[in-house]
View (cartoon, rainbow, N blue to C red):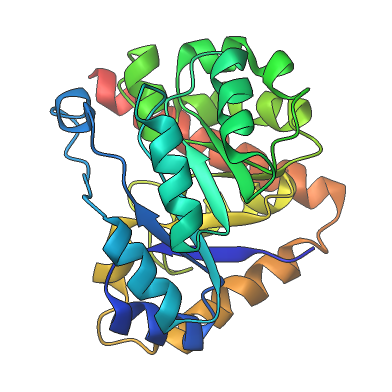
Length: 264
């Protein structure tokens, strides 16, 4: 089983260098509608990618091009058509609230690109069994927005309480991802190596390089660090079931301790 790191960027030079270093996908982020208001208190990133950005990155690299569009609305068909014409290989729909959202999204794509869905609302979690019946290629659990939707104080509660694992059992046919990626010796407040162990245990196929990756990679060789992530994931796949259970428990205890500290 392979693991693909994907990078959010519209910088063609960074995209080109990243792909040469081993990045397998570049994400052009068009999601901005209602996002700043939704995440106002969360200190998260809002991007404003354009069709021009998508086309320029597409022409600059030989790698998978992913486009995250805005959540479902009157604009969605136009955004899907634009992303496909611009060369997107995969289109992700965020903030899904129902099977109908995904049904409509798939009808707009009409087999012209692969389809990805972000599970990041309480409603999507509740409707997961129905969504899983649809021919979606990729599922990603967005911990930040899911925490906001659940009114959780800590984004990792959905990992600790088994929500992410349960979603993986539901979406067993899809390429699955959750959490964010940084260097194997970095990560705060959860060490990334603990998250990578859980990604391996849940047979994740890909992950998004988090914002902190761009900070952590400074003064490091990107090709070396990306290879470390891929090699670590490959090695983790060879763990015994007992080792996987111990690593899972270590992650859950770390998350639980952080949640308890947040309550103090």
